[in-house]
Amino acid sequence: MPTSSRWIVAVKHGIDVNLTRADPATGRIELARAPRKTSDFDKNAVEEAVRLREKHGGTVTALAVGPATAREAIRDALSMGADEGVLLTIPDGNLADSRATAASLAAYLRTPEVTFDLALFGEGSTDHFSQTVGPRVAAELGIPSLCHVRQLEVDGDHLRASRDLETTVEQIETGFPAVVTVGQEINTPRLPTFLTSLKASKKEIREIPVSSLNVAPSAWSRSVTVREASVPIIPRRKLRVSGSDAASISQELVSILQREGIGRV
Image (cartoon, rainbow, N blue to C red):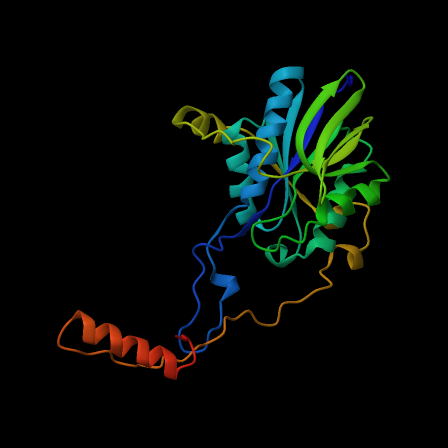
């Protein structure tokens, strides 16, 4: 069992794709005004971190990159059982891409005063789903990376995991520290209660500017810019189906579909 027993879990305050709406005239999605929430996959990572703490002891730290509004994702993690939160603030943090996010997280994790045994990530974010942040952090730190993990177990000084590959499930083992990304198959995240939410409101969230860490500005500035997000506009045909009874209406509908090239008989 690792001696420090410190579990880090990364969370993202991302775009809520289920509530995002497009302008019906232009098809354009206003990303800056889109509603946001904690990424669904990150909740599985938080749940797994809390379970590890409950079984093996230690401390769970929720870590996020973004503007002040990203505190909401950390607050959600705290209400699920995380012990403390750290927000790494960067300019235009809500638009940070995977590269900038990973560079910021790695810069914090490599600082001498920060020690950890395991850093847990969702296998991708609900909005971008690049699936690269966890592996990028591991590469920056030079530590093992286990991706798409569906089962995780700590056995002494070793970490055992089952992870999904394209055609099989792989069993893998590594030491500490390590980075793990988890999918939704690994657990069912607990729902915060009123009491845990109340306790979470009293837990500390430290804010640290990424500019104060040992990382070049070119590394934590985004390299990918989204110029526009839009959905295709499909004009309605405005075809009308009429008839005196069900049979004639059905026949008329079939005729219209055939003329449009949709149906064949």
